[in-house]
Length: 284
Length: 115
Image (cartoon, rainbow over all chains, first blue to last red):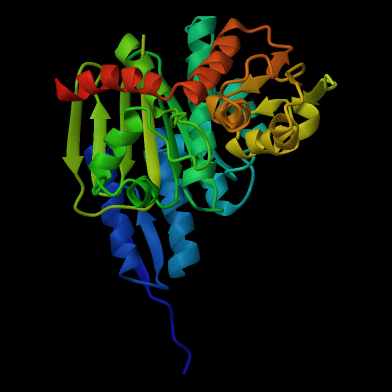
């Protein structure tokens, strides 16, 4: 007898912001799907009231991981997206989900397109940071050249670090959104690797928790074997945020770590994801 | 007998002007390692490089300096016009020769975590 795959309707409602609560909401969905292998999900965005487009980098990473590791399939009502959450069309989320290209782009130019990169695809990542990110209307001309260079190099250091530490051949995901009236620019980079703790903990047994591992990396350490100490790029981003009152979030394992622009806060995540997510919120 | 200087061109060695990955730095290290071990002077040529990270520099220049930390002028470079990159190279060398320097940087960051 043929087994009919179940279809589960899952409602993502309310606000999905660049915050620990936004992350927890996505984790709620991820763990629901993990416990339903092979199920098809109808994602309902009908009661969503706010969606930071950059958070779609995490959502896409989750969907891809569930498709590969858990045999889940996903359906989205595109009409609903058009009326409730059309930023997900403009930023390329819907076209990525459908395996097509976002040929219309973002006519409002408020988003940096959702993009995936292989961890060794250095040239593609450089082009994205130089052309899509730093030349976005939300940043172009608003950063002086030394700051633009610092941000670019910090992201390149983070990218280099994913290749070294994430232990994955799967892609990393990036996406950004510009809020001109709030004078904010939000940018997210997420990978589906092993996170910070595994390699750091192997090399330094005193580092036992994800929180320790994030602190350790931010203090400028690196696990690059056979090399002198270098740093992960995270410290460079932290220094930049310290100087500019920017916001910096790192999520790895059960730790949601935030530099608010003036102080550090940490949140425990009961349900977590693989890999590492980095959010950067520029303010000017 | 004085050994002839060898020139290592970064973009030819790694095949891209984006010298950002640790693995790219290791290609430069692997190319020059034997020369440095045999005290042959090398010049690392950065001409044409568009992007450079410390991850690359620690893997390449830093590792090469670590082979002969007491030898000055064995490893030199050319083609760097960006003063920040010059600083990064010097940092990589400094850290390779003097790991204690890292501790001073860490203590500044530690203050942030302890407050």
